[in-house]
Image (cartoon, rainbow over all chains, first blue to last red):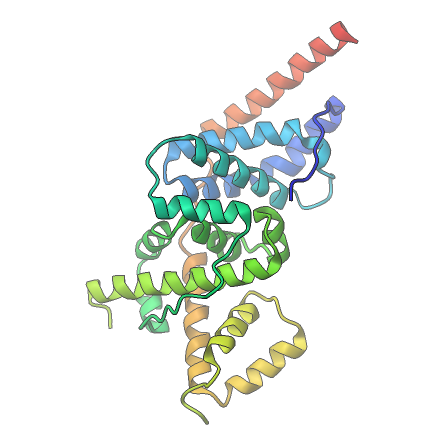
Length: 195
Length: 90
């Protein structure tokens, strides 16, 4: 579902106000998201810069006073998906498949039976770097949704708009992402000898 | 008090929705009441809660200052160009 957008010039004073008030406060969050997606500082900076340029170009599709953060995150996500497709950095077949599924909104019909032998105490004892590494090792659409939900605290409805998927898919994808994350953390915990 | 839950996979989805604050007050109250009588749901809730907090606490990277300045500079350059070009063509 693509929102029809028109590229128009907006009055300069309005553009400056919109930019300063609505867009700039979210730069840290945008950069953080970009970095988690790309795992590369230079790529993350390029992605954020492209996102801001596109946000200005299509500022007419944004209503001041509405939730700029979700709108900006959607643009960034789309930029990332487009760049990911173009750049031949040898994404693994599985990762590319995840990207394609996330674009088309398809989901696997049967949920995988992931059961992790993990306790709350173990998670509490783990270092932030270990949690970070586990998240980075997730397929990109799983990583995306966990960051949007648990780090950026978007609602399911907002995530559905950012990712351009139905709310039901948001729920099921979150559920599967967390299941995979728990399996990964259980593996890390076992290797490092956590009880 | 039960030690295993016959529909744990459904309960786990509800646990996640409760923690994501995507349930009604009624659903939340019903869940907490049920949780009191089910050890597996209690442990599941604690694990999901711990996981959510762990992700939240992984820390954020701040936008580098030079990127912040570059975006601002590019934006205002764009505005200046537009303010010069529009009168030429209109």
